[in-house]
Image (cartoon, rainbow, N blue to C red; front, side):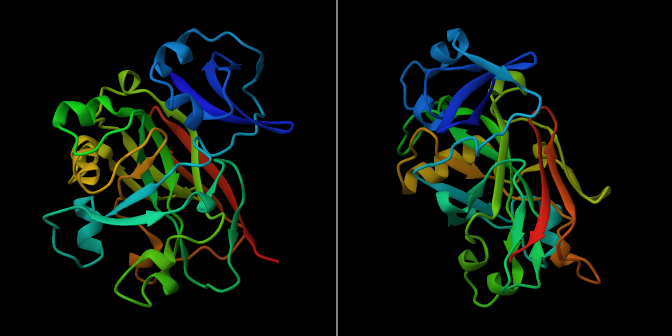
Length: 276
């Protein structure tokens, strides 16, 4: 299935993509849907009101996750371009719900930075609560996958050895357009083409099958530390090709269209605008 959260008058609705229509699933958003023990059956069988897919105003797939955990240094080529050694364990940092925007919303360049960068990422969406998950439990907890552009404020990120302050800017992070269930993408360890295109120029291109720590490993590792709840997001890292690692460096200044896309999952397409 392909699922989304649609903005409607007065709120949002969880929907299923059905051909060229979006079918109401009876819940306010996908976070509320995934909280149901039988969410898969509900999503597959619901037959509520529908809206056209074309021109739909999509919200972040889960507007208010209890947590967003991001993974750094998870593609070998990106690790090398950043001058790092391959890690023995996942490198983790948090985001917050307030950072998330819809897949087609504008990215507002903060007035405080001249080093705004792109990062396309495969995102694991959690569909059931897990803690200290086994291999099988971790696999079963994956509701599906979506796309994130982990927009990074590099000059703030590298003010200290800890990255979080460069990753959590308000309303900065597109996520969506859909959550696609594992059966649609080859399972819980998908090998999908991933890329970023800025004003028509390909900046990042790789394959999610080359992740150093795959989605199941990440669910196991993170759930050892903290409970994962339905609707939580795990951003699995970005491949080589970020602007900060280029020579000379390339940053987003405003006016660009950034497309972060993953095969079978769709794309976030966002215009960069300067903050007033």
